[in-house]
Length: 166
Image 1 (cartoon, rainbow, N blue to C red):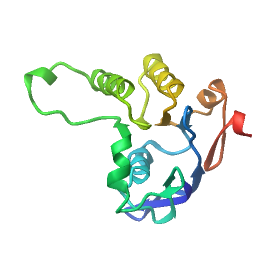
Image 2 (cartoon, rainbow, N blue to C red):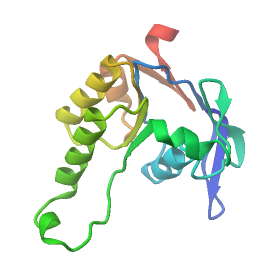
Image 3 (cartoon, helix red, strand yellow):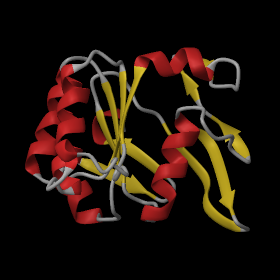
Image 4 (spheres, one colour):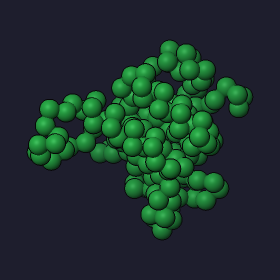
């Protein structure tokens, strides 16, 4: 994403957001409020247009025309889903469902995986495992600069850098 700006209901969710995610890396976006995570992922997947800036994948700009084709190579693990009131879903927590979706994403072959929120060390391990297999993993999580430091990432206002790239 380059210089991304997105508003909703007259409120700016993010402005000037730029980052580059490479294959084989896990990128943590933890400089944005939680309510900006879903709109950000939707913009990255071409489901929602940015007000300013652009998203590109392998040098190709994600547009209304290119996005459906590009989404064939993506996986998305949302923070929460509304499940039908069916017996097989009764008694499962949001964390249970999130864990199942994470395992499905890890077992799949999508080149890019977008994850909203992590529910513990198992999710972190799955993200690392996907990256070890050459996949790009972009994780939106609650603002927590201490976690970014622990995972060897440096967060600068509006940008995320893997320290190996600096």
